[in-house]
Image (cartoon, rainbow, N blue to C red; front, top):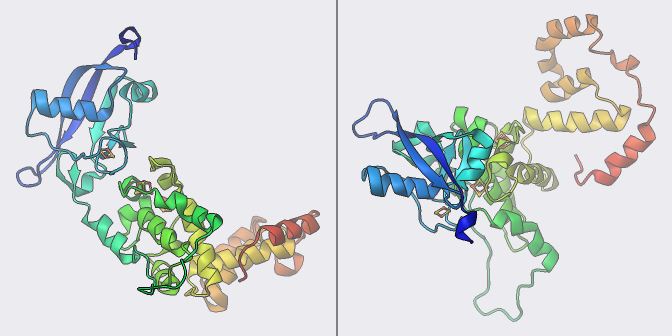
Length: 327
Ligand code: SF4
Ligand code: SF4
Ligand code: FES
């Protein structure tokens, strides 16, 4: 790059400092620096450590966005420190930037967090190819380009943890397996050579920990520095759970089935019927007081009065052509 095209900006960094061995609470230290248009966040972490305070701690390894070690947050945005240009960040947030670890709850020392919960969830989904391969096979095990294509995106996951620590469900439910491990589960579920489909799908569809507890907020897709889109993989896992017939029939799953039936039958959402599908005939009784209030306000229609969409034919054709799952 031509040196004349390099510009500079004065930036104030508020950096999370914490040592779990000695501190009860974290502090935020302020560092003012002149930052060039070529520098990434990792350059600033290096400058703090090398020029100002040698005790400052953070993780890094490859410096090329492939090891996932340097994932942190800048102004609450999941960031790979070695890839994120600082001038780009100041264009979004201005010249005062707060640098924090991925999860302050798991902080050990400054930017370093204890990722053991992440790796435990990862191990839970059997993150490996389970295949009985003959030692001396007569033929190759051919995977077609189309079959390989299905796993390519998920295979690019660098285990940085950005999606895991951005996920609101992971933060409040310690059992929830989380988006990164679901991506890994999908990676092997979609692999034609794998022979553990049912076992893995059973694990990831259990109540409280599995794919049905995802609230579809898309935070994981927003956080991922590799554009892997974990929520899309979770949706594919939902379909696989049905296709392999391993579902345990939790509320969220029955809700999905009720939703599909209502749209197929009426072209519209029948809210009352949806509750009956989700909760069952007995479970629905506890919702009667609310249902009466909703009925009075015209928000629920009695089943025999449920109208049909005037585009029902078209909607049914769309449902048929887009459905990959038989309930
Ligand atoms: S979409 Fe699901 S997995 Fe992704 S962050 Fe939201 S709740 Fe978590
Ligand atoms: S899916 Fe994306 S954000 Fe999540 S661990 Fe993998 S690379 Fe990181
Ligand atoms: S140092 Fe490896 S991804 Fe940043």
